[in-house]
Amino acid sequence: MRIDAIFLRELHIPLVQPFETSFGVTTDRRVLLVELKAEGFTGWGECVAGEHPYFSDETVDTAWHVIINDLAPVLASAEPEHAGKIPLLFKQVRGHRMAKAALENSVWDLEAQMRGISLADLLGGVRETIPCGVSIGIQPTLERQLAEVEKELAAGYQRIKLKCKPGWDTKIFEAVRNRWPDIMLSCDANSAYRLKDADDIRSWDAFHLLMIEQPLWYDDFYYHSMLQKQLATPICLDESIRNRRDALAAIEMDSCRIINIKNGRVGGFSEAIAVHNAAHERGIPVWCGGMLETGIGRSHNIALSSLENFSLPGDVSASKRYWKEDIIEPAVEVSNRGEIAVPTTPGRGFEVREDLIEKLTVRKEEIRA
Ligand code: OSB
Ligand code: MG
Image (cartoon, rainbow, N blue to C red; front, side, top):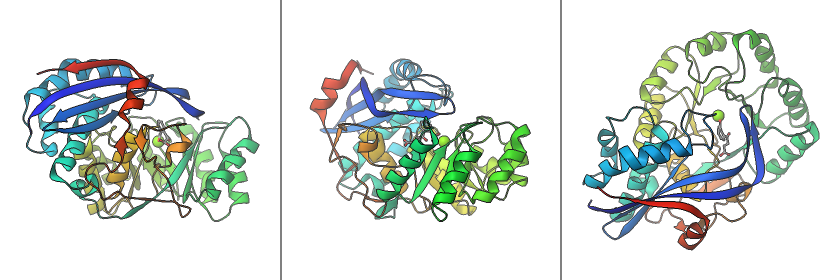
């Protein structure tokens, strides 16, 4: 494909409610969007880097810098025949996987439109609907936590994930489990624990959690494998898995028995598919994580979740949980059975609201070859 233009934008959008994790609170999002123009089509990509380097070392500003200076000029002068070739173009740049993913995914988005097939089909998806769960942030009180769980279960979500940290864990899990003995329940520590907490973590086996997500260091496999040996509950890795090689090492070491795939964290759809396949071949189920995306990133997560081994409910939930008004049309909706229908129309399957995006844009730059 011949690329005519690449635009990078930053949007400011408030969340409908603050989202608290063990690493901090997010109230407003700074969202980076890639707008790729080629052969009469527009592909969109969303960069999932955060406002601060708390979840990962990338931020909106590092991604902006690397996209403008090192990645987009390379893409603009290439004539890629297939989105799967993009990682090779970016090989010289180390790290910056969220920045790379934003560009690569815009090419997949565009290629699906060019070929007249759905993004899910282009990625190799097989599911017509995807199972959905929610990630519930740390709440000010136990009462509020229970009310949030109740609301999301009433909406139909199939799995509840509770964000946790030392002091906001055992008591919360116990209260939720006592009230709802049979729901699919998990927790996500975002690296808030250390091996000295192993006894506490082992006591959570009593709550029959589906998994414990990233309990230890964000860059660790070894100590997670030590911890996994002591637990009946599967560990799920998120932050630690940067690529297929990490997934293989983690599986081989028994550092985790479930993997959370975020296409931004692993550098784009190509690597996300590679992680998915590696896990699939080894009998390790995966699910699609979320990064408080707008509808653009969300539509990409839906397409990715249609691959076969995404057998567990993902953190792919309705637009209205995050935004008063999403930047796509229609907004992402979840059925009362906790499912999202995978679009079958060409491309991402949701229209992008360019007028609204223009209104929310606070900076914009065009990158040329
Ligand atoms: O660890 O999965 C995570 C949000 C921001 C950063 C990291 C994480 C999360 C979530 C929210 O859990 C997922 C979502 O609903 O988008
Ligand atoms: Mg996580």
